[in-house]
Amino acid sequence: MQSEKVLVYLCKYTHYETPFSRHFISGVANCIEWRIMGLDDVRKTLAVEHYEVLVREGQVVLAEPRYYEAITGQEYSEREYIVLKLVKK
Image 1 (spheres, rainbow, N blue to C red):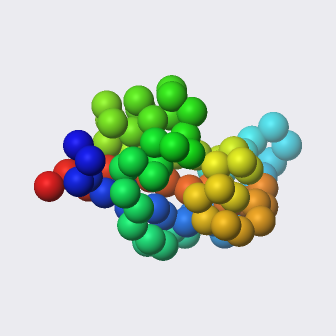
Image 2: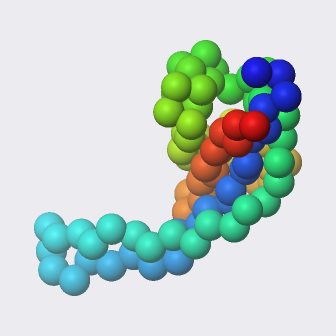
Image 3: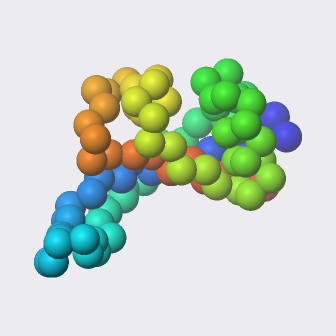
């Protein structure tokens, strides 16, 4: 498991719409492949429950500022999130 890698995608909502009161159309997000990290490095950053989801399901979506900033080194914006995807060999 130590040789496994994790693809990090940076995602940003580009469109929100509320055409009628009490009706909400889901936002449209644009995601780019940003970097590859080692699974061990990701394990040190994530809470146990997020790490377990990543390993079990192969992917985890994180919108919490602390993870966004720790993994990207960039300031968090409410319209952004990251997706971590496990790459198995």
